[in-house]
Amino acid sequence: MSGLFFPLVLGVWWKRANAQGAVAGMLGGLIAGTAYLIAVRSGYPGFWGVTQLTFGIVGSLVSLVLMVVVSLMTKAPDAATQRMVDEVRIPSGKAILGKQH
Image (cartoon, rainbow, N blue to C red; front, side):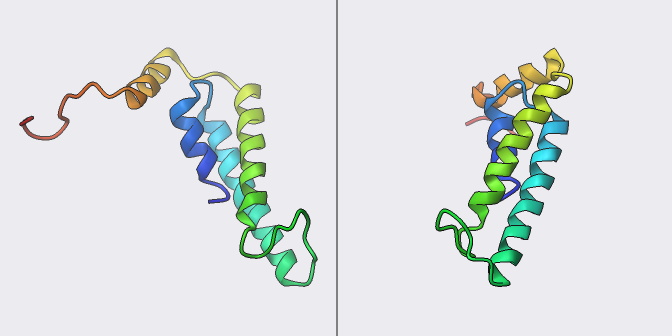
């Protein structure tokens, strides 16, 4: 959850999201969430009431920030990719495999 939630959601709903931002969000969220979990399990008292059971909150916030910042600092996706994002969000109703019944 730490690294994957926001890249998945923003990848579908934010046309400005790009591969560099998604990778940065996934890696940053994974590293931050794992580091926080290890720290809490080693005796760190934590903050904001985030425990070893809810450590994904820390990673997901890092993931969100990194994905947005890196996406905005790098080149926007091309028009074809942005059209694909629209098609993912608004299904056409056409069958991809086999006949439509």
